[in-house]
Amino acid sequence: MVGVVWRDDRRARRADRDVAGRRARGQAIAGWVCGAAGRGGPVIRRYDATLHVDRREFLTLGAGTLLGVVASWRRITLQGPDSLPGTGPSGRLWDPARAGRPLEPVTAADNDAVIQAIEKQLHCTCGCNLDVYTCRTTDFTCTVSPAMHQHVVGLAEQGMTGQQIIDQFVREHGVAILMAPPKRGFNLAGYFVPSLLIVAAGVVLTLVLRRWARTAAPEAAAPRPLAAAGTPEELERLRGELDRLSV
Image 1 (cartoon, helix red, strand yellow):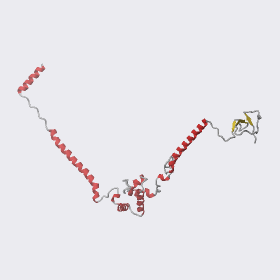
Image 2: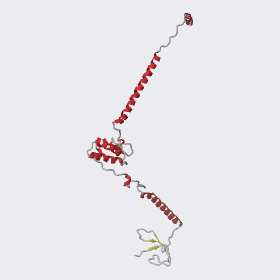
Image 3: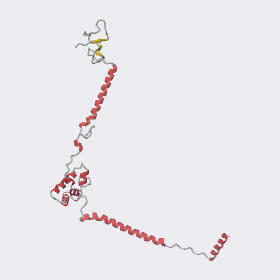
Image 4: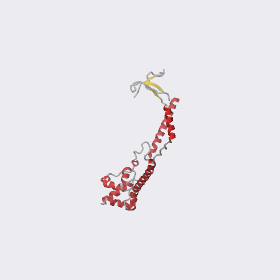
């Protein structure tokens, strides 16, 4: 397709509307293209392969390139830790392993009042100083209490009663597995000695207070000595002084 170019640099040796013509090598022609995309904007043609950039364009291009490199480096630096599980801007949400161990489905035995009563008497051996029921329902990172719970459920499914299950745990772990020592033998001292000590301390304190009260009562009730009466001469002199003052 042949276009018509309006030339601004009209020369005598070429027509006003030059349709085709050879130009010198490397010569740039600026003109107005009629009907190009509905606009008559300037079109600059360059026939050589040389990129014509002035100083301002060069500095602008260099600054833009530098900013692009810095932005890419920062983006790579921030996204680099994402290669490790649970790190980076996305956090731990995208890594299922960071969510903790998967919980077992809840069964009817998990909410059985009998099972819960048994577990509340057993001490969890994970070192939390809690019973099995409290540990497995509050500390979801513990793996000991769920295993002990499954052991209790398994013994209950075998037909054992609550006391038989507790006795089985005592045989496996000793008396220390119980939250409270059994009420027999020397363990009875742990139940009665504190109460007896409190009662004895109360009795001793009552006796001491009563003794202090009896000792202080006679001293408070002792009569004060009356002042001795004056002699007749002193009384007569006192009467005369009073008569003299009243005059």
